[in-house]
Image (tube, rainbow, N blue to C red; front, side):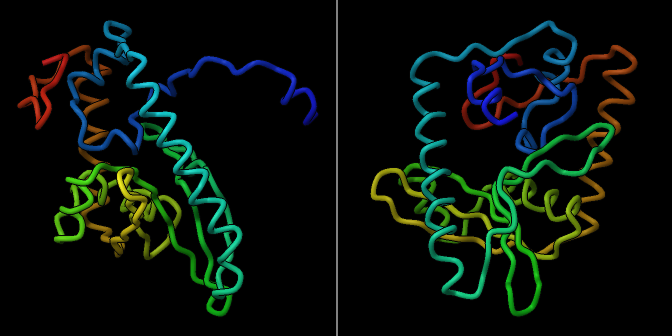
Length: 204
């Protein structure tokens, strides 16, 4: 079984047809057109290099946690773990740690970033969509605390932000996405254009 997996080529990514936790904060209109097969984002080689660097950083963090957690009373319970099946939302948490003395679990979401974002995090300015992502992981896994772990790509420093589960916020986030599917996707009604965000929106 394992040899068959290793000997096969990588398959192309297939969309789940759901709203990914990692796209929280993204444009609903863009997602609508993607789901309808009317838009597909194109990535250039620079973007693929960015993705590859992020993947390498994630693997490095996982390696360090696997090597070091045990001596600090923690263990890595899971990596790249899918949330329980949901009708409209999909997602995969980076890491789940366990405090071995208490049995308490923690979600860890790794973010690679540049100096500007890292400095903002040190000043207490953490992007809301990142915090919302961890909130939803906490909700779906039934875990009370999590951490955003920021890795500075320019000097390799790390910083963390603790996230405490907020049920009301999670239910509100889920309801908005459910309404998106019910009132737009299922009824074939495109959402309004977004404001473009900080970097603009290629669809709007």
